[in-house]
Length: 122
Image (cartoon, rainbow, N blue to C red):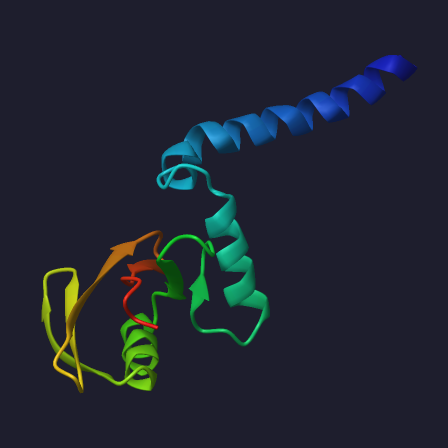
């Protein structure tokens, strides 16, 4: 009896976690390894950052869905790029020197957007 009680609780917790992963695996693993996105979500939730770079070697950034485009426009404005127009999921920016950059977005979940900002933007 004593052993059953201590085996039942961990087994129940393991079953609940397994069911959660089974149901939400397509969302959790849509970008491959979910750890950079989880880290980005935590940074956006618990800091004052509006834009988070997911990995230092990549050019993928994350914003909250609400006002995400405004955050990107501000980010680009600080780098002397002006917003020109939107074409689908691509946003065209032009620098004061005439250089054109296209930034694309992708919905990660209902609450977060992933942005691909080319390396040429410093």
